[in-house]
Length: 597
Image (tube, rainbow, N blue to C red; front, top):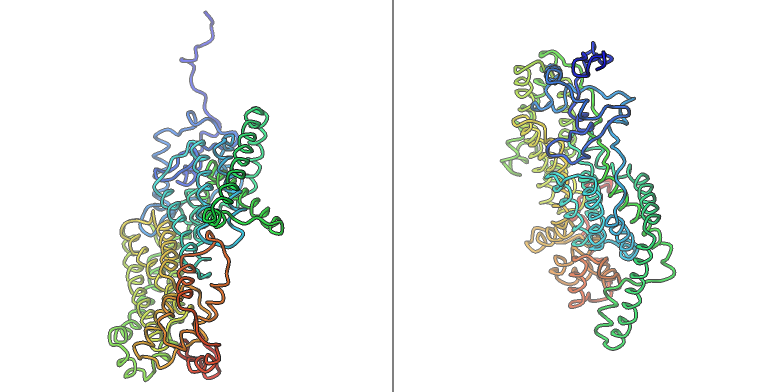
């Protein structure tokens, strides 16, 4: 036997730096180190350079308790209105290791097939405009991300499903509405939700940066795809040859028999021609660019799904906690100012226009123009004040949390009354002069700010863990609702209804004729010559448009059907008189002709 002591009896060596207790690890860093939260997707393990394996690097129970006590002293992350307070700022040398996961596994054939399908569909269907083609392209791109996440061992989480379903729902807006401005908002929001679905962010920095995080995966995704193709091609040349031959034979059969059937039946030829996109030499460069964009986008989505950047690893240092009196006194003064203002507003809010005229002597338009924009800015600034107040709020214990609730809770409630007052002012203005795109947009913005205030109140009662994601969900839901209600259709409906009810003796044709095809069903109810004057420009765009089915919205198809049955009449000579008479109904200009709305 050897004289050396055995491994079991040898005393354990003291690790280097053991005298210094480890710093508390923030929740985001723990997730980036390989322990994702229960409701967050992520790679099964992420290690920093030179770190020990997870089995030997786990802290002892005593160390974990110390870390928990240190975090509790610095500020409870899950306490109401103080999510993330007390979390230390990541050091610069460890930021990359915390955010970047290990390289994803070798790209699978299912992922490659979905990526190529996305690129081909992008080249074929996205060159003629936006419509249901966005949903067609999004399906294989989503499958590529799903297969890549499955290969990396990620599981589908509830919030991931929420972001993904919400993004696909937003892509239905271009398929339903012809108006370009709600379509733009919906497409941008769908991109943001898709990026959140891939990255699984939950903190404020994670949600804000993660909504744009897909751009960070474009170059790594392309490199990952090229390496995967090389590895697959080098190891299985025979399989690739069989795949190419099978595809070529299938295409030849489709072309030969499709041509025969099309020449044999005119109805089948028309159906086939309407379903298949037109291919022309002149559109070749544009389709090539769309193919490249679709390929890069699908690879970026798949790479982000397989190895998402953990944006939650970015932490923000909390502000220095202030004393109770220093922190609370300015906010209490602000509460009293809000209360004094709202006491007068309640008379107007529930009294109607008669009270407005008796108290202020102003008309509908003068009263609304005088205060709506100021109240909108007051709402935005209040949200900023609340964010800054939470940053420097006292956080020593239960008494401090009660003080925060007691001061900020009433401020949120009073601001909600300000939101109601602003919406009431806009309602008075619209009732007098009609609805426009800008008016409906700012009213929707003010309404969403009210929803954010309600979410902040709920966070003060139930905790702020879900507040960042709840605000993101409310924004996406607002954009979706805004697109589905058809703003142009609602504008036309409201103005036509006022004209039919006799609340207005004329209608602003100069404004209504510039609306999209979504407004046609409402404008079709107008009498002549107002109807033909309002629909003349829309008819020229709709009936002379040869956009294929996949780039045509349901609103445009419905407008085309209406105008084919009842085309406009006359040569438009009466429209100059009608347009001049209608000026002022859609908007009410100032003395110098400038319209603030």
